[in-house]
Structure formats: C-alpha cells, structure tokens
Image (cartoon, rainbow, N blue to C red; front, side):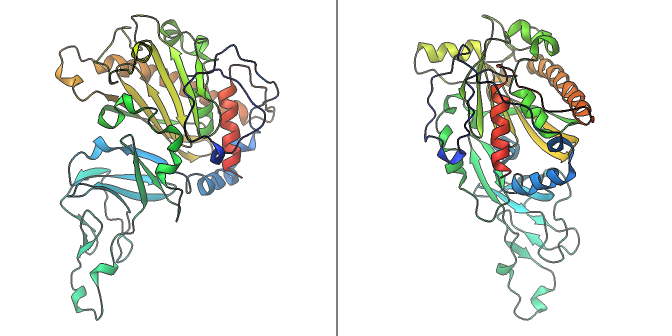
Length: 396
C-alpha cells in the first residue's frame, strides 16, 4: 500500500545509487512531473517476455527464498524453486547456511523430495549417493570399484547464497555482484528492526491469476486504498505517505498509523514491539505510529509494523499467474506473553492481501483486452512509475 513522492523523468542507473540512503523523507507536497504511463500490454501477457524475464531477471538477480529462522538448527533444510531450478537450502553442522542445486552428481536425480525437513545427511533416493550438509559426497555404493573415482570431485553443485538482515537470498548467475555490494545502499537502515532475530509465526501461500508486476505496482501506492481497503484506510490514512527511496531497486517509505491504533482486526497491538530502542525521541516515536513499506527488486515486499513484520515473496509462474508466499514475523519473546495475539494481525492482512490480489486479477483481465492501452499514472503513483523504470532497465 504506498505512496507518493517526487517523480523524476530521467532514469538513474541502480549502479549509480549513493552508498548510503539519505534518511530524510520526501514530503507528499512535492511536485509531480506528468507524463508517466503504465507498461504496454505485451509486458503482462506475452510468453516471450515472460521467458525473457526469467532469463534476464530471475536467473541473474538476488532473490529472496526465506529467512534463517526456517532452518534454525543444524540439519534443517528446505527446497526452493527458482527460475525452473530446484535448490536445497540447508544449515550444516558448523552451523553455516548453504545452498545447492537439488541434482545428484550420479544420474541427476532430485536428492530432496520433501519441501522441508531435518537430516544428518542428504541421500539420493535412486542409488543412495549421500552428501554431507556442506555438499561433500560422503557415500557412493560400489563406486570404490571404479578406477580413479574420487568423491571429492562429486560434491553437490553450490548456488550463490547470502544473508541480509537474516533473510536468505540466492543468485543463479555464474559471477553475480556480491550480495553485500547489492545491499550496500541499505547498510544499517533497518538494523534497529531486529529483522534477523524475528520468527515466522504464520505462512500463507496465494495463487494469484495476474502478472507479477501488477503486485509490485499495487503494493507501491495507496491511491486505491479508500475503495479497496476501507478497514485499512480507517487506521492508516491513504494520503499520509512519505517516501525516502524513490529511484532504483529499493523503493518505498512510510504511512502513518492513527495514534493508539494498530493494523489488526481489533485495532489494538497484538504483540510486543519488534524494534530496538530508538536513537532519540523522534526515532522512538516513529516506531509507534508508522508502518514502513519497501519493495526490494525483484521479488521481495517488506512491510514493517510496530509489533510485527510481514514479508511477501513473489514467484512468477506464467504471464498470467503468480505464486505469493507471505510470512508474518514477530519478536522471539512475543510468544511468551499472555497478550500475544498474532491472529489479530494475520487475519487483518490476509483480508487485505486478498482484496489486493482480487483487483490485480481484475487488472490482468482488463489488460488482456484488445481495448487496453497504457494509462497515465497519477501524482500518487510515482513509486509504481519508478518501479516500472527499474524493471525496464533490468530488462535491458
């Protein structure tokens, strides 16, 4: 649900972004340069463009696949599908989080069939080749009878993996830009939110019949909120938005929450705050009456509330279909308190999510019409317009 900020017609490269984000928020009273329009029809319906997105974006960019709390113990693992590849994300005995292609080095069989689990080692179900959690081949029946066979040469193929604020990212490119360099513009920006310590209490998957870009565009503005989200608009005024990230792969800012209210079904706080102590009174107050919404290109939506954090992963399945994985994270100490009521927030956003997905599906249906042509963005849609510019840059 976002936001309005200054709109610039000249597109700046992501590589030219400053090393540190200027913390001051852009005010909603800033001028808006007219002229931006929505993307042409083919970007939402073309199988050829969808295939090109999978190659240029989802096979080359850093993609969110989960959070370290999913594999809290040595031996925990989960499987993620990324751009047609099956990946194993596991915590080894050290304990280090690692990623591998889910492909046995013998005959190419999928090693892990379950979506998640716990194991002392990973064993292929076909011929029982067995791999340590760091990827080393440690068992290969009868292969000692093969001349010059060396287990050390047949480890699982690794995938590029990195952590940012506790979130796990992978990249299928051969030599990608280092994750630390990619996230350098956000260094320290969210550290006081304790994101790496939070624990997911609930996960909901949504199968949406709409193009993945429509979800980003929808998330990035609240122009639609009065009509689509009446409950949300009562607690968080749709015209209260201010942005601090207005160009490039990281976009967003905050919206205000009415004093004493929370984004829950009851309107009351459902858990203890997730943030640490503020640096000063202003920082302390902003954690109580603001909700922050940021999109991280190309598949992460990060929504930070005073007492919980909601994260969406977007996984395009076809030009007209997107799988969305939504997690609700809370402070690790929250569950120990009698007043912990996560369902109050989960129900609120599950309803709001479904309202968003419904209008995205309606947009997809209309865009597929021969009558569709790109329409003008309003002054409250500068962030969707900026997202479109970043998308076009990434597509080359």
